[in-house]
Length: 292
Image (cartoon, rainbow, N blue to C red; front, top):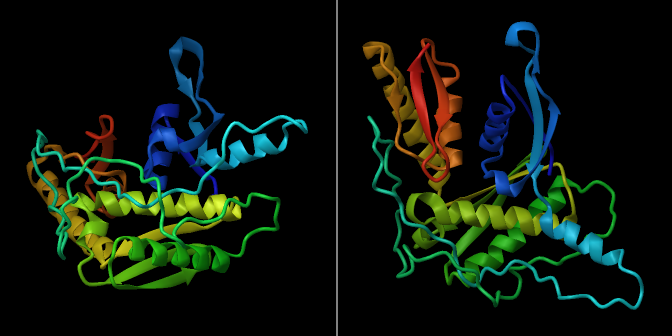
């Protein structure tokens, strides 16, 4: 996965910005501090913090370590491909003390009984859903190969969910989007799109474990959820900006997932008279829109 470079007044702020861009938490990334602000005379701070981050290839490092073991030394266990026999879902928090609330997600389609279930890891994956663990040294991976692997992965996942759907790939250079279209796909989206976010994370890790590091950005969309959600968030963000300009007071938006926060930041970055920042810790991290 490619590195993301960010700059801010503090290391913490630069780190937060990198996490926003990647759409993950700090536990899921490799993080390097390239430069720290210097404190000069009378405590004045000079310069800015620069960091870079990328998705953490944890499983890849484990296999590399095993290849370096001396001959005759036994391995402690077998690496397995990620299992998708069970899906990760989470309930949406209703306890936000915010001035305004973003549009609720509209998860259309029939919901399964496990729609609000607890998060668990399945042990047995259907054939074709888990990708091989082949981490030998290779030439740079063609984005088309990554896309084909992701499509195959999602085909298997759709079968594991017992759904009927068509999986297609849109590729623009290193930007890859795999779309799943069909009926009765609400279970693959989940409350607030959390199951879809988990599926996207699993697909990225599976592709990295099979193909090694590759300079692509993979997105997964199911039943057009992300497109509809982005349109709703864009409209909501502009209304919030109008209210801030009208009242001159900051608005704290209800806590939301990192990809949704990124949409708010992106939309309002071109709006005059307002600025945005993120406050709090996940899962209660929120965007604040303030007069600027």
